[in-house]
Structure formats: structure tokens, C-alpha cells
Length: 98
Image: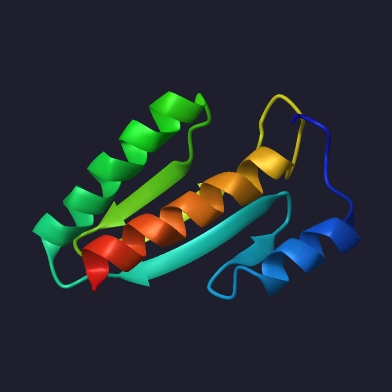
């Protein structure tokens, strides 16, 4: 899963990931949670998933605001692995943030 996605494939994927956007060679999502403990709970769960998938996001933590940046560095851009991880992050946020 290290083949770069085409612009059309990325656009299609973003159609199913409405809270994500493309910034250059990465998929990006920013979310505000109820507070710092909730943000850290999300980060901890995403870390477990990332380790299991051996695909790690860049995560910026600003109190209760998290920004996820997904890019497959070895491929030099967005791959199916990034789309899959974005879907998994969305599920974590759905469970923890609701």
C-alpha cells in the first residue's frame, strides 16, 4: 500500500472523509475536544492503532485541539494507508468525542 494516490483518488477519498482536507502531500484534520483529558485519550488510542498498523500520523496537541497530518513519508505523499488511518481516526473520534 505504498503507491501514491492520484489527485482523483484523493478527491474520491475525501468525499468519504468530510472532516479531512488535503494540504500538499498530506491529509489533515483538526478537531476540538471537550478538554485536555479527552484529547489525550484520543491520542493514546490513535497511537495504539498506529503501532498496530505500523503507520504513524503527525499529531499536534494544543490543549483540547488536535491536528492530525497523514502522509506516507517513504512514498512521498498520500497513499491508501493514509486514507485507512484517517477512517480509523474518525472512528476513534466518533467513540471518544461523543
